Length: 447
Image (cartoon, rainbow, N blue to C red; front, side):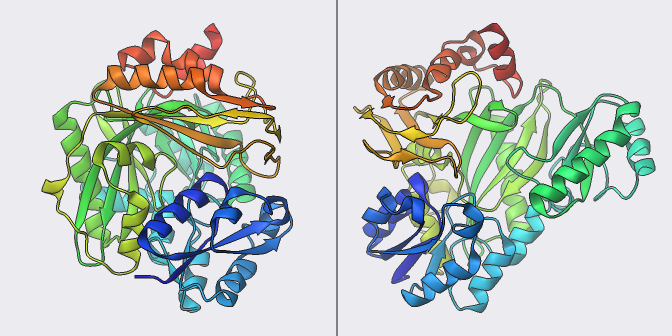
């Protein structure tokens, strides 16, 4: 087991990792920008190192500074959390070359699965259904027009190195395709440093289903169930729940089987999430694999009773999984609401000083946050400020707990998305479970 882990992140996920390390008896090092000097993750860690000014590219994305911090504190491993450098293959390679363990998959797996078009072909070879589209990246406008004509419009253009909902565009007809190609290539190059793109059939109003998998270096791979992440705005998730209220048990088993088969075929080692679209006809298609811990890992923890961060650390240290697939049982239902520091209906960021804070509690209520009274939500980083997670014996109880917890949750000094979450949970579509990736946009038109 590792002796000391440096957490290359900030906010609630850094605190989450520190807590897991403390319970495992592992010392921790927090890195921070000058703006985060008084943040909770700095207070809770055993040691801390300032790695640069507030701007992410000069601090939390500054690889030399992070590696130097690990070396000067004698950290033998780095946990990247999610975001920032979590899916950066070059960073994982640097860790490897510096004899520092990267808590995540190998650089090769990050690279192979991070290239969405390549991941699509790997999934196809593993037997998973994929959305009809281009074989690899597009080489010309003529190729794109030919494929789109064959699979029929609408189609979706996607950045091959994309993620987080960026570098994607729906194209409804041939006259729009050439200009859309240039726009997406430009967006992809600016956002990811890679302008390659691919094309798929656009699946209208699907559910976004993901399977949490876990694999060790001894050849053991297992599924930890599904999550429904369909409540999204511009491909950014707002609410997640498990199990999905619409999947049949047979579909759930089939999709999980494909996720495990893909991980097994590529020799994957770590936590990972294999994502699918599930259409209104009950057909499903692989879309991507995320090679990191997810924001919404919390709901899986609630229904399985596992600490996924601890398991991720154990796997990275070379330990064998302590249980088999038959040991995994799903208990009850869990829902997570992502609380963002934003105007709840305009979605504009709303940084500021926290003037008051009341965190909900009671049986089955969990809040992951780095907020405290007089802390500052800064404009330099993403707007996620808290995750509210509930667990009930069934979906009805989980919904009741979430509504009650949201009504108790008070964050003074800034606007948050709490009112929007209450609107979503009270909508007919969400209550029925028959919601999809377009449901939120339609709900916003009615509010």
